[in-house]
Structure formats: C-alpha cells, structure tokens
Image 1 (cartoon, rainbow, N blue to C red):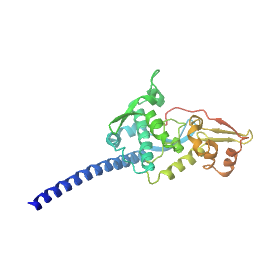
Image 2: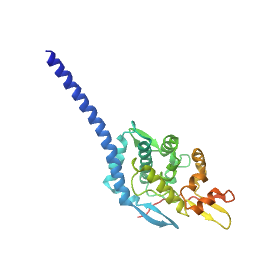
Image 3: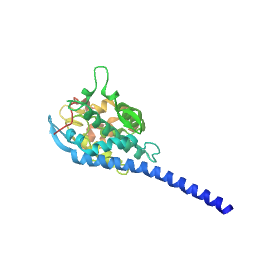
Image 4: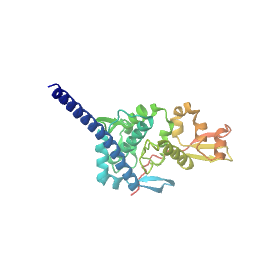
Length: 264
C-alpha cells in the first residue's frame, strides 16, 4: 500500500512537472517564433531607398501587410510572454521589437496615409491610441515608449524604435535579439549619426552642429550617460567627436520630416 501511495504521488509530481514545462516551453516557443517571423518580414520588405532626398531603409507596407506572416506576428504578440525576463537585454529586445511591430500595425490599420500622424485626429494623438494587444493587454505606442522602454535607462532605444517616418532612425532590416542587442544598438547609433539628412550634420565654417530633433526631445535620457554631446561623441569619427566636445560648436536641430518611410 505504501508503495502504491508513493507511486501515485510520484505520478502526480511528474504530470505537474510535464504540464509546467509544457507551458513554459510553449511561451518560449511563441516568443522565439514571433520574432523569427518578424525578422523574415523585415528582410523581405525593408530596402534601402532615397525618398525626398533622404537615404534610408524604407518599408513596403502594402506588400508586408498582405503577407500571411504579418498576421501570425500580430497573433503571436497578443499572447507572447512578457514576464520573467532573465536579463535586461531580453526585456529591451522584446519591447523594441514590439514597438516597431505596433508602429507598422498602426500604419497598416489606416493605410493608405501620408504620415503615421494622420492615423490620429484633432483631439486624439496617434501615440495615445490603442494600437494592438501585447500579452492580452491593449497597448499604445506612448505606453511602450515612455512607460516601459524609457524607464529602463538605455538611451540607445531612441535610434532603435521607429515611428514610421522619414526622419526617424532607420528601421533595422532584422529583428533585435538579446544576444546581439548591444552590437545592434551601437550599429544603429553609428548609422543614424552618419546620415547627414537625419542624424548629424556638420557646418565647420559656421561652427555649427545640426542634430536630429530626437536628441532635443529626449535629452534628459542621456544625462545619466554624461549628456547628449559626450554620448554621441563615442559613435562618430574622431574629427566629428572633437566638434561635439567643443562647446564653440553650437547645436541646432534638423527639421523633422513626418512623411511615411514607405515605398512600393
């Protein structure tokens, strides 16, 4: 009888372990597959273009929206696990990808449009509209950016999340991963600053530096890293780095083009 009771208890234990492992494995599979599919979409529908004089990685929204993988990405994101990240890199990569997916969804939900801002209205900012569901909860782009990503203290997110506009940092033609996140973010920062029509423009004769307005809007996010100018100086050639460190070079900001980063 004693052996029978022990056997029943062991069976219950093994069943519990199996079920828990199954659920955890399911969650991990959803997250992995979700971004593998997103990665495939980016590789297929993002390409280098020059639009309105700005060279960038642009998106073929129309074709992307008709790809069955897009619907799968959205469905997977609805039930993707967002709890229990073991590292900050995992959490950052997840929410950067989630933001970019939701920005694309916002465009496609209102396509065709000239600018993502057109998806909003006179009394409803596009950034505050519910755009989609992540882990069973309706989200806005504002929430993902300001309540989640910015609070993580990583200023490089501002060259990774893309608001679907020509003056935004380029959408990267691959998904972000926790394993390569720092490499990807560094590369994004270097590429953005190397683009004189989007990131950084130098007027040596006038001792002026023109930066993306992003660095004005979110200057406070760089304060913990020494400030905008010292931080950016790490990602540019030595000559430009010296200009950033030289206060006689005054800062100005580039006009922001909100037109859609789209091609057909």
